[in-house]
Image 1 (cartoon, rainbow, N blue to C red):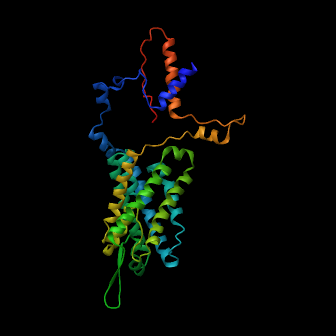
Image 2 (tube, rainbow, N blue to C red; image 1 turned 90 degrees about the vertical axis):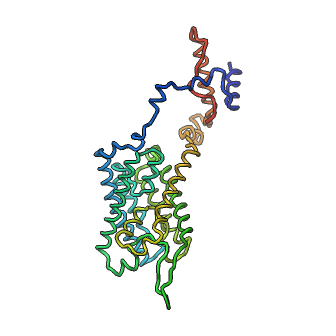
Length: 349
């Protein structure tokens, strides 16, 4: 008995399928294929356009984005006036805003996160479109509120805290354009957006992780990532006129609509970069499989059992081989069981 079990484990390690596993076991009937077929209407989610909960969530996104843009732009202006390398409040503002609307709409406040959710199938395209529209309107309202409370001199000096690549500064003879090249700004925007999306989606917005850690910790991670990306990028480039990675296209759109002018110069970068980052993240989720950790066994192996012996976590092929051997014994124990059928391959995945 022990010899047969060792042989099955050896077969599993070599990724050899047992004789009881056949290709025809995985064939689907026409009824199953029709049932698994997803229509275009289901993919677009057109029924979400008339769903009350979707519109309630969009209102939460609108209000949250408006407050976020108003507070972040205010913090950016005050930080530049006092100490340009010490924006201490942006992480806390984003944390509290996300905590308030996370149960209602998910607390996106960002077309980048909304688009990535739509690409990986967490939400429908219709809901993503409604949320993105609400975020853009909210960003515009936040910029309008900021314009109403600051002076015209501050608006002209700091451009309402908008996203800029280059600015026109007065020179001795003629105006001088200072800033970053468009290609450099595009790649900085893409890389920072991908890093923010990669970490926030798989650490903060992942439901198992959210269940393990507290909601405050989840929102703190989002605020930390956004703050580091936005305010470290201009420090690394050390170029005047470049406001740093926007990461949030809606936040860049609001001041551009209200203030206009040079804020529209290279504005496409703050949309094209996050869009490319979302597509890259989508390909990453398809190419790189999610690694499932057995946290309980890893914890037991690290601290040991009650008798002081460490329990080693069983590998995948060992678990599959044990299940296959158990099925084999049960099949031979039953009368008239000449054929054994397995519903899973004996491969280490």
